[in-house]
Length: 433
Image (cartoon, rainbow, N blue to C red):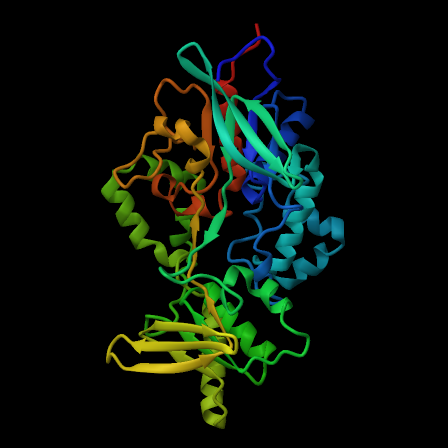
């Protein structure tokens, strides 16, 4: 496609997705405009009908694993009225939260905060619009613009022309190879949604929960409490749940400055650092929750009323679904012994993987540079590295752990990253003649 005199208006950016990362970006844009500063023009597109963030895991007592100070703005602008503390003041709970003496709010509360922020910048987003493809627009030999094609819930298509696209692709549930989600086999991402669809008086006799991380432990605790007659089988390949490392020195890996060091490090050093510090975030559990589950398991042994069953050093070796339940075969990795378990439902808390935006790019994806592992090469400013033929910016908010470190998949650096992306876009935006 080539540019003509009848071209549609051109924006500085189009944001794909409106999760926490792009909400943070929208806030940063709004704040710059509010101060009378120049800021890129653009719009965000979200396929959901309204803001929502891991709704299926908003368990009543589940808390955040990051400090409330790592909200959408504070590390960039401590005086922002989009902070978590400003939200608490708005809803009349600031003093109550202070008296709570914690850095870690309830997950439901933080979701409410994110929704509050999203509502305040809703003029920048179009909900119910799914991006279906991104097309190149050429000026001579160069691709100078991109046409973002979006489809609304009625099937109508709209084309938005832009100089930059900021992908906030979010995460997609990871299921074991060969296992598909169904009416009885779930990923924990949809736990509360699926439980809400059970008949009102449903009383499942047994659950199997697969996984060793924070989500798996939370699901086990929730199901054990919610269904007091059900047996809950927790299955993991380790000897037990491993505690997360929340110590001050280890937490430095989430500091904004750590991104600079990680991005410039040799590839072998990056791999080493990721290996060293996986226990800050992956397949680890809050120590208090580990203690609570152990106490519960031990107390049931004492009283002879075992409902919580821990299958360590084990894996799911077989899974057969029927209208009445799921026949699960567990295999002990040490002895090879196989144990059948009749479950009403199986929940896989097996993590996530970042959604890959490259399938949306069509022929444009051929212009991207990649790492030896086939992942996108990403510059320090979160712009995907491309051939010179493409002068547009393609930015990633997420899916950059291999180039920017562990914090790129978390909330930790959303505030700072938003400013860095805006600064990069402004530096690359042509100055009007």
